[in-house]
Image (tube, rainbow, N blue to C red; front, top):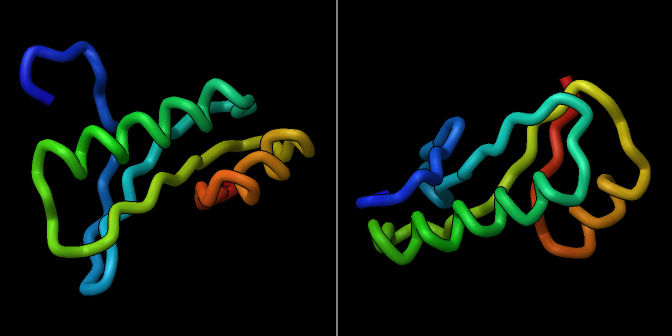
Length: 79
């Protein structure tokens, strides 16, 4: 992002979607906000033809975080 302190952790490109990843140990609701923000700003700046999807990668399963990702359409990966 131009002139921004925001940093996307990873981007995955597929034919039908672009996934913007936020990687956080023990991810909480703040990671959801970051993932949504980064995906929104990425879509605005680059305007890809594919759908842009926010995602979180984390090492711990936090029930509230998992439920909120479902609610807000954020992909969730526990590794």
